[in-house]
Length: 98
Image (cartoon, rainbow, N blue to C red; front, side, top):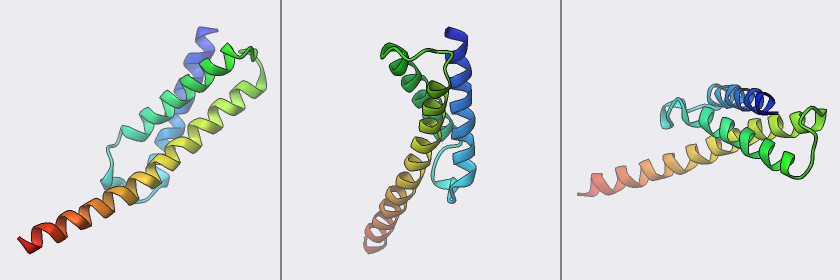
């Protein structure tokens, strides 16, 4: 069972890397952030589903874990871009008035 969780975590990291390169404005976030988010989401979802009794060698645990590890980093990347851009604009406005 632990080897399958490792594979799911690596798959989540790969989807996180894909999200990093698919979402524009890469310079606003670290290169490893979305990769790490994808890996953590895959591991947590996998562990949670096995605790719920899903078989670790079933298809649906893979589908749910990998889809979640692709969607959550993408959502984090988009929200982080918005938040960072707005914060940078506020800081520029505040510094330019000083």
